[in-house]
Image (cartoon, rainbow, N blue to C red; front, side, top):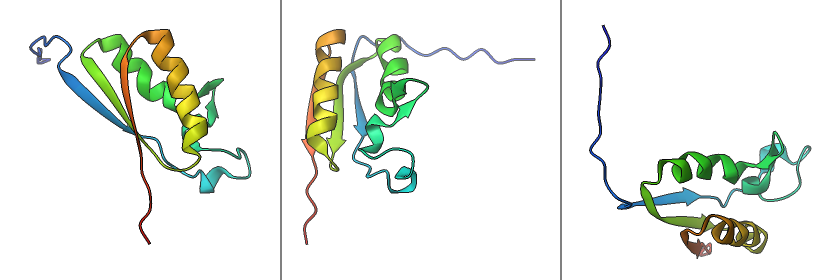
Length: 97
């Protein structure tokens, strides 16, 4: 017997926070760049985070937290923003020493 779970439909009321500031230290021998842009099956890793959210159409705003090579990741995110016409906020995180 399976339980049928239904969720109330909300109209773009969710904010999604995606942490994309990794340095990719464990994959340096394969990819030299920010982890968010590491290629997986021909697409950057961040693409796999965005696709289910874009398909759901429940997210009204995407917030990306960036750190390592944030300029490079921001360029890719800006292209996604134009392509999918979504609201994206970018927060660059600085380390306080």
